[in-house]
Length: 304
Image 1 (tube, helix red, strand yellow):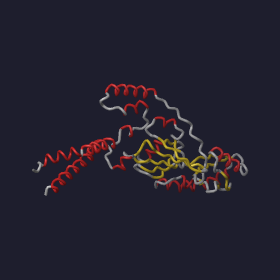
Image 2 (cartoon, rainbow, N blue to C red):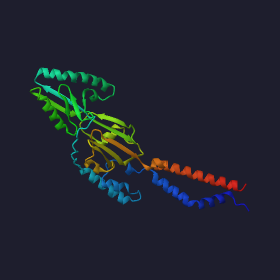
Image 3 (cartoon, rainbow, N blue to C red):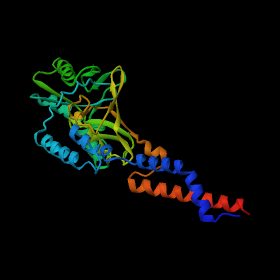
Image 4 (tube, one colour):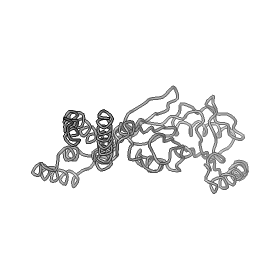
């Protein structure tokens, strides 16, 4: 006697119950948790996001601990490591003198380049590319009248002193001001606007760099952001956790010229599940519906 179809379906689902349970657990664990989204979490915040809504007493205690920490938090900065000039850096060199002839000589080059740089800035380019001076591949700065001056491997103060010594050979009472032409850095990976950027300021944090690139995508791994830092003799790769408040006291919190930031994706993108619990449940319901329809089709074909 042939069994009714609902009975066969019930038995088929019972036989596949372990697979269904694994599918549910997989979907529940694949969505992105709040603790993976929030920046600069304190230990109390991380403990809070590890709790479930059923742990009401523990949640209240965690909330009180968060308020206590946030009301008194102060994280002192660690002085960033000194930047050493590298080849392809762009430096701004201003030379002023009480000698009118010296001013006219140097300002003739500077004003012409600044006009071209201003036009470039209006078009969205980098103005320092025009009125700054690029360090050559061999590490020299080529200045009008003064010629080539070795600056690679020096900090900004040392390079300024080197230029000052050269100008003292030709002029009296001439003064040099040397500075980096902004901070140039690159952001790649899971950000909204990956690319290379130039910021006209002397100090830039890693969070400001991410904001410049349009923030991180939802599937970005904020626990694993790689900083590739360039040095005159090579590169160093450092992994940073943007969700940890200890980032504020890291020597790598401030971005330096020529830094590259790479934001890795979360595993959820590889798995193809939803970013939220609702999206993950939609994925699992679709999978269950497909499984049930496959079982029904199999039983129907078997009884033909």
